[in-house]
Amino acid sequence: MPDDFERMWSDLAPIGRSARTGGYFRQPFLSAERELADWFLEQCVSRGLEVETDAFGNVVAWWRGGGVVSHLRVHEPSEPGPKGDSLPTSAGILTGSHLDSVLDGGAYDGPLGVVSALAAIDELRRRGFLPTRPIGVGVFVEEEGSRFGLACLGSRLATGAMSWESARELSDRDGVRLGDVLEGGSSSLLAGVGTFVELHVEQGRDLVDRAAAVGVASEIWPHGRYRFDFAGQANHAGTTRMVDRKDPMLTYAMTALAANKQARLVDQRATFGRIEVAPNGTNAVPSRVTAWLDARASSDASLGDLVETITRQALERAERDGTSLEVTAESVSASVAFDPALAAAVAADHADGDWPIVPTAAGHDAGILSAAGIPSAMLFVRNPTGISHSPEEHAEVPDCLVGVHALADTLERLAR
Ligand code: GLV
Ligand code: MN
Ligand code: MN
Image 1 (tube, rainbow, N blue to C red):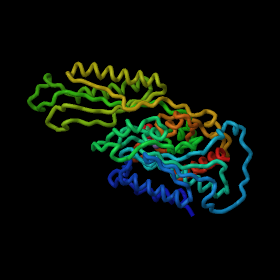
Image 2 (image 1 turned 90 degrees about the vertical axis):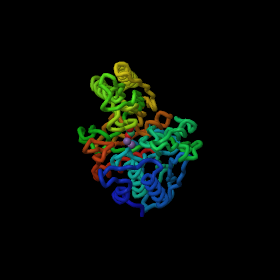
Image 3 (image 1 turned 135 degrees about the vertical axis):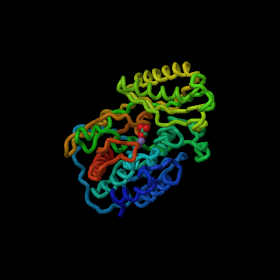
């Protein structure tokens, strides 16, 4: 008998958890994330799913309608809903998410979608449902970009949105290249996928404010990661007069303030969450500061304007500080509008009415698959703290179980 949601959830809880912060460190291809990957394979095998992997570490496990059926009863397909004609009719239905985390992240971002996918298959089997279209549970690697810097790396490689030739040169903070970790090549993992449905913890307060346990995604804001390399002159912290300094830390500090102000002015988002300082000594003016800007906006044009304004102000300040600045866009993802008919069909006609359809400013593998032409939808599960990418991220078990049922209902509609 496969494990149920709560059992699976408690199996995962200790893996990669910091005793100091309570947060998770599940960086791709390192021990905690690999332990999760092994756990996932065991769960798939115990359910009789057909496991497929690709050269990048992505996995899809297919339920083709056979396998372990916990108990048998004749399935009575319910009448198609009024929006049933909107559902795509080709190929397999993929669900799932990712198992990696940001540094010191929450338990839910990623794993909730994977555990809920397995639990939804168990639920469909309990219902006696036999899919006429295969249902796959997928795990994409390095969704957060916490190790190799590029978000949704696994799904970008699997869809061909990024080539292995450029990805293999990415390196982590210790200088390990992705090409040293993976053999790489190409992927046909998604060849049989007609639709993708990703369940995810909500990363804001929209569902809390609407008093809804689950919601459906309408769109993903465009977002990008930009590396700001500030260079100056290393010098003595005591003997160098203030007017004689070329201090890149000052230019960076002003840029961080400018980013915050500019984003506030237009109600968009700009964050410097990571910096590296060289030589990083208390008694020396630094020679170099590298800082990464994460910027997000409600339209592609607004994102471009925001980053341009921040860059211009940083360059003006560099001129005054006697420092220099180079800005490199490490990744930019255009806005994604999820298939509106699919979103409406997923959201419609539930026992508790229609689920709300809400936008998100968080990035997801579903956005990459959607941009690659695979009709995709997302289900969100309410997060009472509204906090994410933090140990404080949370979802209550009853809401998670509503999510599992919502996903099972959605898969049943799509795979019928
Ligand atoms: C991923 O969760 C992101 O939005 O950065
Ligand atoms: Mn995330
Ligand atoms: Mn995620």
